[in-house]
Image (cartoon, rainbow, N blue to C red; front, side, top):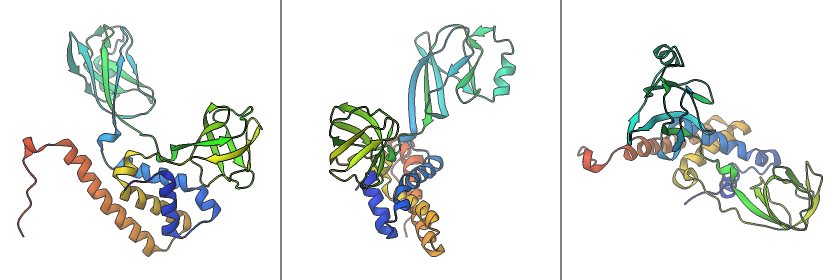
Length: 283
């Protein structure tokens, strides 16, 4: 079993028996908050990413990727061999190499600001670097589908479109042909034959058909229970649900998180060759 954004939205509506317009419009927020809970609570390999780069000789800074959250490791290639730098406090690296003009083989790195690492000592060569880091995967709410329309006119990428009959709002991500949009999966469903209007361009066209939502994420495929109950918790907060209902969703979410934590922080980081088979005490 796995969820697309559409099927997850439908499941939450069925669980809560709520089809109110503003509730549905906020479904993306509920899902994103649930994903945020999981992201910040468990270390999973799916949240880990590697990026190759180059240090610049004489430059004490190394830019971090735009989706960077926290480092796992940073290494350089020195004489065809990997050398790992040690992650230290910013004060330590600045004290270790107080004169940025002093260069050498990098040994330490620290988080300087949201965009850069500070390297110590300042690189004396353009070392090839490999950063292993914690990042934010694409949200399930970024799922996309194809909207077939009449002539696209002067619509632009990134602008919001609104259906005149359904009131559904979405965002254009691409215009691959003169009669198709690639759009974010909307909170509702556009109606065939209705007019849609671009918020920025003011252009209008008519909907011919709406494609299916087939996009899944790692969490929606492999952590679907945690994602579902995390979303239900956020939806219940929005609805000001009764405490017993909140407690039930929270209990199910905690149970799913415990199993997910065992996967990410036990099974993903060991193997049977080193640790042997899992053995439980006889009862």
